[in-house]
Image (cartoon, rainbow, N blue to C red; front, side, top):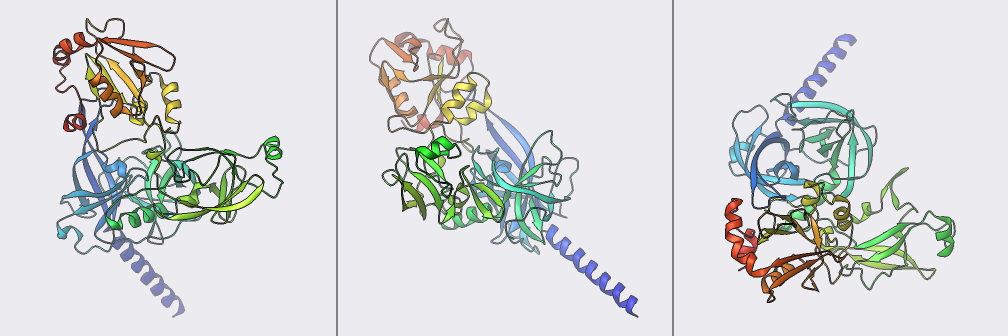
Length: 481
């Protein structure tokens, strides 16, 4: 009798689990994307690409997925597990910073009978997970089991920014992107990327990042993840610590730069020692404990706040401890000379006599090996009041008026006829307003490119026709007229 009851109980548990698994699968979505991919090296052209990804239905009749699954999208369709009908979807909100997106489907039938997935908490190392999605190798739903390997800050391939990430050993492949990682039936992360040529090293956008994104979007406007706008150095060197009068009981990071437009300008000073955020101690290597015995970058506590909110910073100034309030008002794009990777827009450019100019973007740096070291160095620089954007001579379209200049490409420009400029818009305007017979472009080393203004204007149409280029400038510049 006892054995019979045990078998009956086991059968009931297995039946309940099977039913719950089926309910979970009902919320998994396959995403079909047709995207218009810009060509940053030939910014007047683009190509079409089709791809698939994964997603999960959550509260509010939203589909949660990766931003890179729907980046540059021209047309989206979605299909639920166990169904063969595709529905048209739209992007409701996107965070290219955090590689997350929310999709909407207008047809209510798509959500019929589905139970949306809910969020769990930030998973622990060694916690078991199940990753659902539609990876390459087949067309039906895939489920892979694994464990959490580590939780720490990692560079997100989509944006190039660094945020908290969850490393997993579950098999993750192209097509899995955007699919949920579940533990105890709740979302603990969203699949985002893998390390190529590795053995089952994949990364999730953690649930905390997804919740921050969704909370941010409740007012219908994406504000993003805040950037303090300060440069810092580690304080591990003994001589440096003695120089600043720090004993073994004090740890933190040295503030060596405050960006001119940072909300902390006038609140912090270069030479201050940042020792804690909201009472959480910063170690000399720049990490904080976010759980017992687990450390990650100190920006972990910055990223828990929404834009416009304030946090408390503990600092040491002139060997005296004090506290200041920091309000998050800026994103990384407000701080760096080269903006983070751009999506959902065509690149900005204009052509003058076959000389092609563009603002320097990370998309460009990723697209070329030319002058890579110098351009990457520019990408690491902060904005200055007098310089907020870098400009490059992207390429020279060979013609009889550009002979000898055809080797110039990805060349950073600093002056137009001896005058510096703040950003691409000002550079463009200076080029348009030149009254002299010659336009003299110059880099910071004094290397020059000289364009005969009248000759360039006379040959412009002929050069554009030769290279099958319809417009001499991007749509944003044409519409600004």
